[in-house]
Amino acid sequence: MSAAAPPSPVTPSVDFERDGVQHGFLRLPHSRDDSAWGSVLIPISVVKRGTGPTALLTGGNHGDEYEGPIALFELARTLSADQVTGRVIIVPAMNYPAFRAGTRTSPIDKGNLNRAFPGRPDGTITEKVADYFQRFLLPLATIVLDFHSGGRTLDFLPYAAFHALADKRQETACFDAVRAFGAPFAMRMREIDAVGMYDTAAESQGKIFVTTELGGGGTARASTIAIARRGVRNVLTHAGILAGTVAAGSSRWLDMPSDDCFIFAGDDGLVETCLDIGEDVSSGQIVARIHPVGRTGSAPIEHASALDGMLVARHFPGLVKPGDCLAVIGVEQKG
Image (cartoon, rainbow, N blue to C red; front, top):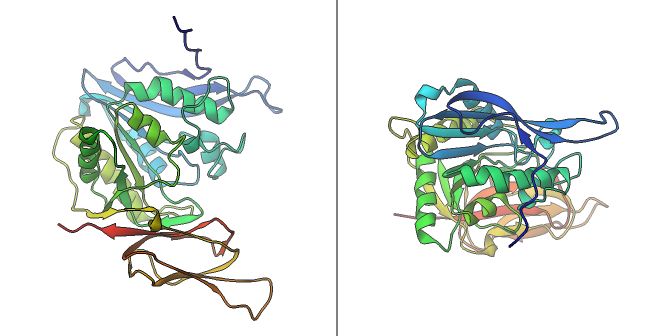
């Protein structure tokens, strides 16, 4: 017989099986210079009534992305048990240390939570959080909605997204949930590297998984916050957890058919963006220029699109380093 799985160091202060509304914490011990018996306290809410599907709603997977936390802190405050059939688990800021620091990765261990799955119960702080989600929260869920935006370094068209999956029934269920979310755009998303992602962890457990990219620049706009607020309630309605009808508008559907969708910088310098987000682009068209800044008189390096489509994301800061993602091209799906 295999050895029993080690316990998680994370302790929830909520009872996932109890009906009603509970607000509490996931407590993770963290001994440090300023608190020998200290803890990281990750806020969590559970709203439950009777039996039914479970939605796991998360934001702050990266700490500098804000639409999700705004929508989810508000939902946790306003959602009542009598509105729910089933269960809603809300974690507005998964990587809580990063969220409090306003950084993509944890200031404690520099861990990128969205590359740390399945995690380790005896690992770093970030790995311990990933392990708890992997082994204890994801198995409870029927449907998972994880909010993202571009953070401080990218800016995106506001879209909800799903991935191409080997299980086509699961992929169709994810597709339907993305459609219900009702963002202005919907994307079949290609990842540069899916290893260690929360997305991959949820999908490998057979969950219906929806993610988003709702803007960026390390801030949130009124329009993207409104998309997040409406979208999370649409997903809960679609799942049968909230009563009523989905209040979504129609989305424009986009695809990322190949790695040619990504444009990366090969040099450092000053970025000149040649197109704005949402503009059409043709194969061979210049999307961005990188101006050398070490001396005057040097010609900029031009970066062109490899395919026809639409500019769906761009590098946000004015300066880039080699290897930075400059732009992402999506291809609109007609019909």
